[in-house]
Length: 395
Image (cartoon, rainbow, N blue to C red; front, side, top):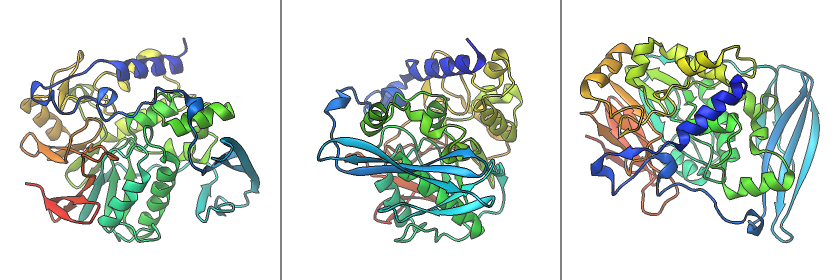
């Protein structure tokens, strides 16, 4: 077993571990992989016939001067799937490409690697935090409109504000591609307006980038099967989305606030890892030529309390207990922050924990019994913002 296979095996093992919620939460939400809000299709893929759709475009770099642009088309009438494509010559380092036929969008392509965004930002006046999206594109749009981050044409109108996506755009929902392209476009527009969009990697991004597609929606399961393409192939190193995803951070510090998908565990303090080191190590692990031994990868990146999978703010596992007040204070002091915002483990409303030192963000989207919401931070005030734009103060 090579080092890449070993990392993949460990991630699968971590994801499948049985997790035990606090006794007070037993009637509410459990862990991600075992939640009542999990969307895992267990029927016959061949029986699925969705309405007409197209998925894409997907861009695969043939070499530094030519790109293959392709869409997957599904027709409901005969339940067929086909591919249409176009070859594009690239004459500059950055180019904008028009979508084909019904796709009226434009897409920026970048020759070479994407630049890595900074880990720390100061003097930010307003921040919007978005929990785990999981392919719920339509709800995401309504939330961003309600928060006045985007206009009716889905363009950035939030000036120099920052938006943080806490991770897990992938899996479960059936509009992952649309969600990724929207975020990618807004990231570019935000920077052009002196704002920033931070898309932090979550465990489901890592799973797909490491060839684990267990939790993809039935749409993608059938699409991949009919095309005889492994779903993660759409996001390999030679694809435009794949290159971009591998440039992203896993944690960011804005003012005195820290954002991460799973959580920063006490074990991080023991490892003496800075936020920049955390981001660099996780990006490194996604490269085929990472140059680390199995022992080094396990020690530095994918130990049980790693930032993508840790659930110790709300739950205990066989590897760790629920974080204590003393342990949490050590984490906060080590990184010089007053609050940590995290997703990964579901809650039914955005809420403060541990006297406001933790903020739980993963409110499942796409369920009638739960109100979709994002978090607005403005002038040190905190608000839940709902689809209709209404704000609710969080005390």
